[in-house]
Image (cartoon, rainbow, N blue to C red; front, side, top):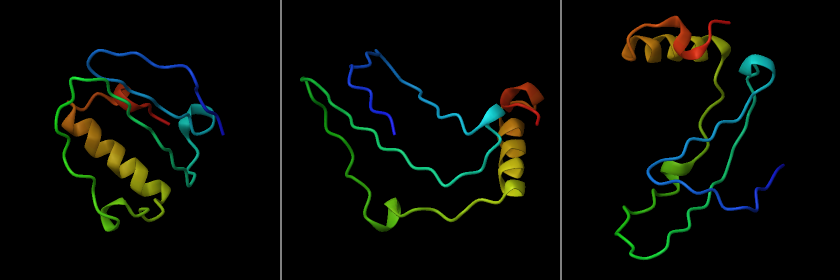
Length: 86
């Protein structure tokens, strides 16, 4: 487990990824936690989802990941380079 103690600054958005083995090809049961700290002026945030909405999702089989990848590619224009081609 790694903890990053230094603040990460950004203006509009932030994307963080986790590599799942060589070429991201491992299917593992992983979870992550992120904390958001915001300085004033604060704006109203939507309510936190209930316990049922935050429950762990079922295990994904390899074929499901490939199927979702294909659908995601289609939605983004169909370029095979969008999400690897293992």
